[in-house]
Image (cartoon, rainbow, N blue to C red; front, side, top):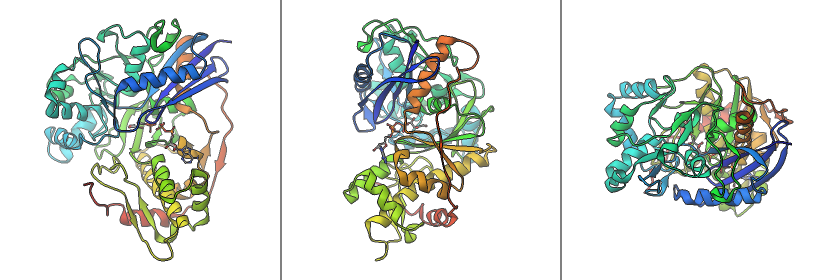
Length: 476
Ligand SMILES: Nc1ncnc2c1ncn2[C@@H]1O[C@H](COP(=O)(O)OP(=O)(O)O)[C@@H](O)[C@H]1O
Ligand SMILES: O=C(CO)[C@@H](O)[C@H](O)COP(=O)(O)O
């Protein structure tokens, strides 16, 4: 049996799956936690990857490996390849003003937004790497000066696995490059002019590999791994999830992890000047228009904490309250928000009455608030002309029964739930198998069983949410 490994280095943890390259059958897996915070030393990711590889039984019998990772994180390296400062993650909002400035520099109002969307497929928000680089240039000029190369979390881990042999060895792929804000989905090339505008100069950037292009081999002893396995180009976690689910045009993947994601595979690049839909690339040569919220599974974590219950009880409580939670609405902007663009916002609770002041109503309102944000995302994806034929629900939040049962009601469409699993790591493993096998399309692995959840639509839940979602206080 030939084995391949896939890695998901995501916000809260690192997961490794080892699968049969031919059938896709799961053979072993391992995981390790990442530290909290929106600013993280990349050494924590390599340590977690080392632990997760170990927990998965090592890589000595594995023929190929690929890394999927949280997108956009700014990893700055000096001329010797040392990390200059902790990475700023996708959910760090300190570069919100930089985003506003960069948009205005390409033209006032709509003109600037359209110019960015036409240039790179997205309109800057604090999440994107380009805004973090502007923030660095403005606020930490000494660190900016020391920065010789910039890469993303998955690029850095791939480079470490390959032995970190010099900045010229850095590689990435279209999927993750398309989330930087200085790589164009329209031309398949970097836009050094935009990077120079943001950062003042163009540091070394990872070479962008094709979807199944080899990225070298794992170096013996790198992150404690046995050497020799082929390395895939890796990709961003959302592109990896699409590959893991085998999403095709017309399929929408809804992921409730640290971020809430609504994405779809498309054969054409998108450019949404409103900035709601980010026009990324996928990991197969197609495109991945997507809407992302900063607040997803952690809204459930926070509500469970508030109520002093575990996830199972939170779900049970939510399912005992009525649809619409008697008018109680949780606006879930606990970390600020990216879609809609409210980086300085806080969460809010609206509609408290004596009747709604109990744990069940709060639990239900939290699940509904989270789903309303994703329903807005689904609507935006569809409004750009993307067909919505099937909607898949994945991510840690999909383990909640209340989420699975309320999603079709709030979204107004049936929801397909594959078994709980690590679909990002699976997608990376499938990419590794593709690199090994070669060819123009990834190997076909048998589809997993799917549970279909259906419910009568409850449009009044979204209507009530829309009434109050902009009534929030700013952070102090
Ligand atoms: N049964 C559950 N119900 C609700 N949320 C859950 C459940 N199990 C895990 N989670 C949450 O899912 C999140 C982790 O999901 P995951 O998709 O792995 O995130 P990420 O990829 O961003 O690290 C955590 O916030 C965790 O608390
Ligand atoms: O910012 C985005 C995508 O644009 C996020 O989806 C990150 O890629 C983090 O993903 P998770 O850790 O939540 O899976």
